[in-house]
Image (cartoon, rainbow over all chains, first blue to last red; front, side, top):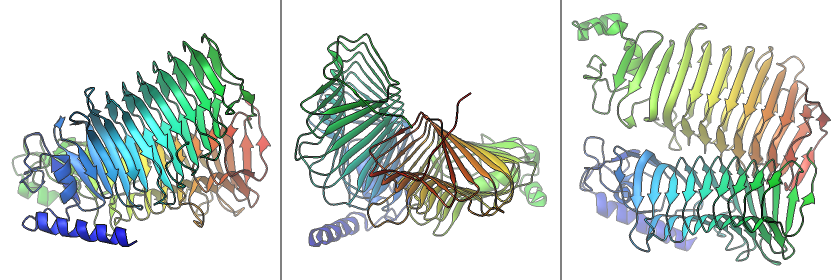
Length: 313
Length: 309
């Protein structure tokens, strides 16, 4: 608690120091534009240039609105905020850089919508979700990062930490989406109507660094042409990981769906698993893979382990 | 209003325009044309012809509005409305013949506005491609609403203090909710309640997600999809859920009360405290093709099998 308070005090004084002469402090909606300037008050008429400055001046719980297709630079998010990129707001990163880091408080909700996050094969991370109550990523493209497109890590700071992804694209990263527990805190995620293509790992749920429950529901999505399509990993005495795949297409990967470790589980429903060059599914090291018997699994090089039947109801 | 319009714009036939424009640097003294756009949704609404369209030129906030006639508002995904503390972004109180279309709007409550869309009366309301978030009460409230039908598609209802969507009409209504998500709301993702009416209420929910509407142990609220009609004198509420996902809620899908009927098909219910619940003589039908597993408690109450045909 003391650390949080100190942090708040520091943040408050930074705000006052940085923006005492503008009326921008406390604005609920701020604007960025291709030809804006961070000396501006971030209004529509006098927009700012960078996401970081806009974030720093907007009120907590406020919104950054993007006016032009352009790049607006990486940013570190430390409070509740909504960033509305309208499908044309870019962020590029320098070598080894992170496009968006989220280090907010345990009660903050962060919404990212319509952003084009481009690693250019040199940026390290697209989005790192470390602390906040929740992150939603809608209508975004995250591509070409050398490490993670989207990394969400549990921490014990907030009781429940959740991620919601919809209608987004994670392409050509080392990891498209990686969910990891790193504490006793639970992590929950939904991924809906999204694509993970050409990554080293399309979707990776990793429980071996923490003990909190890791649950994910992936629906109406595609993991294609990755080295590993869907990868579920944990180990005894670590997090129980449950990944639920409904109407997911897993195709053209080396390994389609893989679970490894005694507390790693996936459930497969109404999904298509095909054209994977090493295995369609692979269930190893005491993991469990369960099928509702209504999946379409064909034309893979083979499978390892066997699917346990579970009943629809 | 006609007088005001005529006085301000004597040379332009604004009162008959069927398409009006708003822009970030417009002014409400303008005639709401593309060249001379207005500034606020309310003024644009007031001058556009009934059945006309408001077209948005820039990403910006255009202020709350009260809709009293047939209208289409095309926000192109970048038209914002913020509210003051306790305010409502859009109130709809039109006539029983009017159809209202909201498309591409970003309704932001900033944790102080009460309601995103408060629907009182019209023939119909459609909400497409909208984001409604962070209101202290309800994202889309059709409470005591009078309408024939309501339709929502491809929209997001997140982080509202009460329900993401509350349908509680006072007259018979049919509604569809398609490809929408409701996440992190305080009371429920979607609640369909029969207790203020006496007519049939028929709702179809498809390809939608209610997730993480529960804060965890100790939180007495926070369900995913709720159908609630517990008095025999109240509306028969019949809701068909197809290909939905309920995840991370207190109860994933809930049928509560004598006149509540849930039918569930091809749906995923997982990661909830209780997957599905039936209480107070509610009916919970299944087509036998649902995926209900990995909840703390998968079930509470009986499922009734029904057949596809």
